Image (cartoon, rainbow, N blue to C red):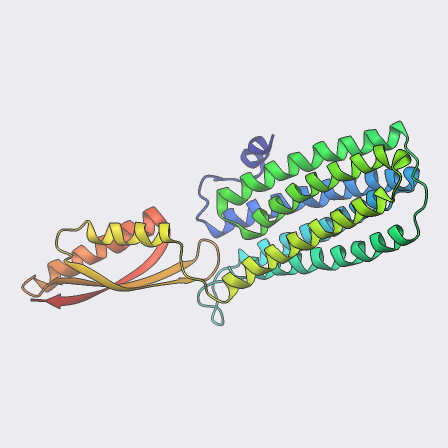
Length: 305
């Protein structure tokens, strides 16, 4: 299904290094999120009203916050896809990281509100009723979140988007949360303790943990994290596979957003090598790394004897 939508709505969908293509991926993922989360919110709200369950209502408003997060992800994708300008010579790619951070804050806000409501429900428990309609709505929402996890993970991996991957992780947490809520709706009427409030508490803690993890990872990127060992190894391998390069040092990698990585490295070359020939070799390596890794690299020549 998601592959069909990608092919149908994203021209040149395989060219994921193109900022415009990345933007369309992000907009597609966010638009699907807005639609799906709105539908799930309505379904769970109806189920929560029928059952009188704080856990179900907590899960419903969690989906409402996810809908708001999807709106933010669409705006982040649109801003991140803008071309470089005089004030932002390296583009606007970090707007995606800012969008992911806003998503994290929304998740944390909803989580703490649901946490407080669950505490109140445990202190003053009220009866929970179970109806086939409410259970059916919860089961449908569980399947809906499963699909959302799959498509967010697929789109996020396709373009390396932290916003979409954060949405995928959040959808996975929602699957676990809705499963717990479904169990609560079934067992609360016969449980000798306030199971509904306890399940609501667990759901809220899961939401808070998810928001914390997303915020931590995003702040890590905004502050300028070290590149992955895999990326470092791939850059170094491509530089040193040229037999004229005797050694390398001072590799620096700067992340200006997904698909906007700029790097520099010093390459040691024989001092006896013709300057024009050496420049041609280095230029070829730079173009190879850009084409294969989508990393815009500058290689400094260090003549050695």
